[in-house]
Amino acid sequence: VQLQASGGGLVQTGGSLRLSCTASGRAFENYAMGWFRQAPGKKREFVAATNWSGRQTYYLPSVRGRFTISRVNARNTVYLQMSSLDPEDTAVYYCATYPNSDYEGAREYYNSVDYWGKGTQVTVSS
Image (cartoon, rainbow, N blue to C red; front, side, top):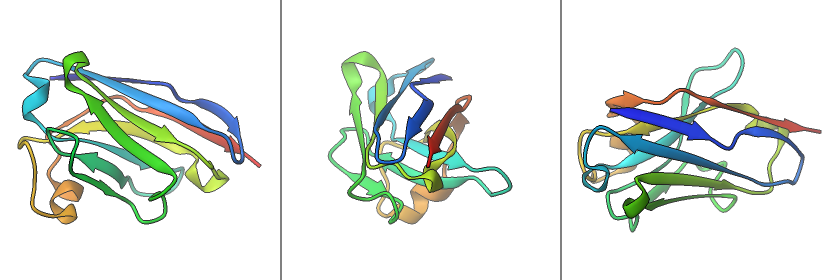
């Protein structure tokens, strides 16, 4: 399985970015997808996840209402629309996929990743 993320960059506080992640190597529509991030000197943290259909989503509380995860199965792509960006959002963002199509609760999305993509840098300037 390969995950290719793109869309990172430098943006000012309050700005927006959209990250994309295209997957290959297995049937995209059968698996949940997610986004994580890692800021300098910090552990990687869960940001958002969606089940196979896109109808079930979970978010890190600090991004809920500002970030939106979505997917287009026909394009094998998952997106992370980020708005009202803050310097605290500065991090390397990683796309992830899961071995199942969905999970019963958010906690399982934190810990069940089976493949990671290479990260894309998001920098929010103050």
